[in-house]
Length: 566
Image (cartoon, rainbow, N blue to C red; front, side, top):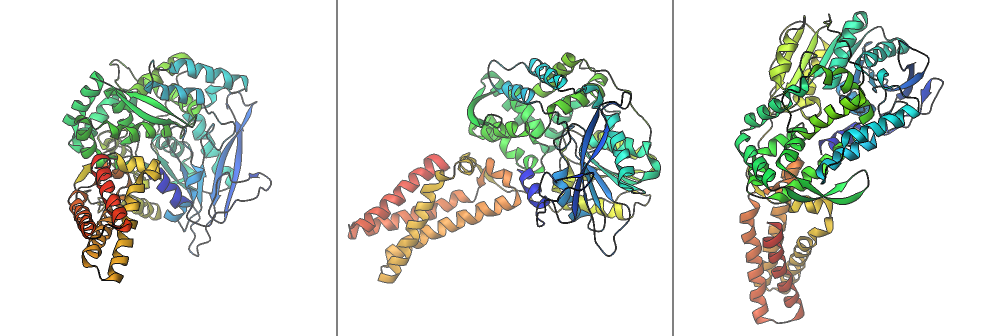
């Protein structure tokens, strides 16, 4: 859900689709004004430079009076995540600098794009029985890309680093400020080492040190986040219950655009939670979600199943596995088989692809470095990122309380710290970052709000009750019928209180509505009961169709409210 918010912010400026000029291209998404897009033409493999590929990028040109000469260059993580769509969002962080967003080679807005729908479908197929063969699907994708002339050996961190260095020279910036998140923190750190004269400062959000064996650490990282959230026991109980008796969950396949029934074991839910906890909003609702799942509220699994499918279309899996199979998987031991199916799938794909193991760069940058990490990050926890950042020659680390992965997307304080560092990257220790992020309060667990968000007509009984109460209030007030007017007033008050509570929760954490509604809504129900009683009392004296209709609507609503919504 945070992705929708980020995209809305990124596109909040008036959209402009730029026209191509020599060496440029049409921007593939809506952009803020004064943005140009282009392709950097580079060898697919610099050791055999015959075949050329195109790396996409965008430049938002600042016209601030105090414009600084050194821009910020940003790359998303993944590997395989797109970057260009965040140009507007980043421009708001750095209004006095040009902002350059650069795609990874093989990414969504580069050419060729190394998409692997075969692999994505097989990963989603882990929630079906029998589970799909991810390795076989990945081999099918590899062979298809090979027929198109793609050499997967050219898609690795070393080549991506060389692309960023080449782009600075192409754009003729004397120096710039590097900004990476998650996987691309490795890229940007290596760029700083390879191009010291062109690097003014480095920002590493959710730092993934080269020394960390991510796959070997994955289960431990998830357990650590759950322990900090205080939900480890509930998580273990949920996992055991669903492993013993997997749930059948209605879900939507985003690749095919149709519904299917997912079969979700406890280990499947653990895998999806490991990804979902990247979002600070999800970590905030985990203390309510996991105990509810332990108690058997399997209706709450539907948002997780849908999120798993939607996450599969956010990466280009050909690029993702090309990088992982050369730069990450070979450096892990896999001595203990993970219970997370994504970990085992990546290992199976790399065993099938048999790409060569890369050679780590290992050089430290000379430029000042700010690393940031979220307290609840299950992928790049401060446990590993803090010591690695502080070991850099001019590194400092800031932990963002109650945040998770990619903190610049969710934390205003993190964005401010980044902007201040880029404005003046002086030596020293970063000050603590304290976001005023309040709790969610008591949640009444129910899957109804999420189902309504997917199928709005399911809220028809509530809308009809509110409308009938309003009509009753106005009509009775005009006719001087106090009992009926108070019945209508109670119904309108109930509808307003519920709407206000739900809206307030959504503004603080939209994801919480996938778990339930504010607990205060339950006692508000007595206001609706009072409305129904007063409406029925009028019917005892005046048995006309308006009173009969109002009574039936009130009674029907209460049945819907108690048996379905709550």
